[in-house]
Amino acid sequence: GAVVSQHPSWVICKSGTSVKIECRSLDFQATTMFWYRQFPKQSLMLMATSNEGSKATYEQGVEKDKFLINHASLTLSTLTVTSAHPEDSSFYICSASLAGGLRDEQFFGPGTRLTVL
Amino acid sequence: QKEVEQDPGPLSVPEGAIVSLNCTYSNSAFQYFMWYRQYSRKGPELLMYTYSSGNKEDGRFTAQVDKSSKYISLFIRDSQPSDSATYLCAMKGTGGFKTIFGAGTRLFVKA
Image 1 (cartoon, one colour):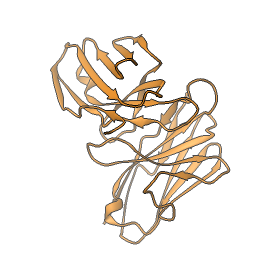
Image 2 (cartoon, rainbow over the protein chains, first blue to last red; image 1 turned 60 degrees about the vertical axis):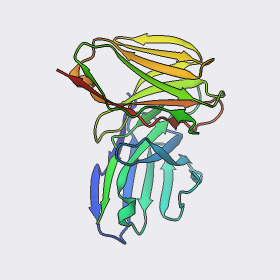
Image 3 (cartoon, rainbow over the protein chains, first blue to last red; image 1 turned 30 degrees about the vertical axis):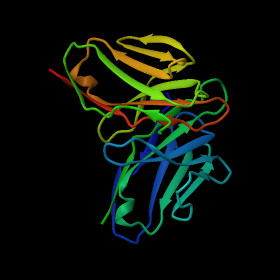
């Protein structure tokens, strides 16, 4: 149980285009989803936290107009990188949490590797 | 000072060795402590989850938390080549959802 999927697993796009990444919780309802980015040999950097049906909370320094997050249902959150540039190339990972209870454990997706040419 | 400090390694050990991975932290409000394993180009997977101080064992893995020293450890016994991965410590306080991750330690277990 507690499987999180991401699509696509990798994407290459031209500079200036927009890319949408989907994050799905397959066998549980996730009231909270998180989006991270990870540069090579570096740790996870939280970008934003999204709760179903409400606006995402962005971390300091993350442009909300560039990284659009939608959490339309309890099983799906999307991250859209708008007008992507080469510096946006990174590994984007989502995680999902079932809020409540003692643990609030996060289950991670397999990640999406974005390369912007 | 970072909230969580973790030596990025790499750490290289022979097969069968006992591996010790560690993190220190500065925020005394942290109550939940986790260890994740991340294979190359994959998302992290949860290995161990502990609350407050103490030890927790699961198979070849043992997690230790010393809140007085703000120090957590993960021990891997009888290490295997398949344990080669990056290990990330993570921790969070109560009441909020923000988890803070360490930089991750790259582990190589040589056959």
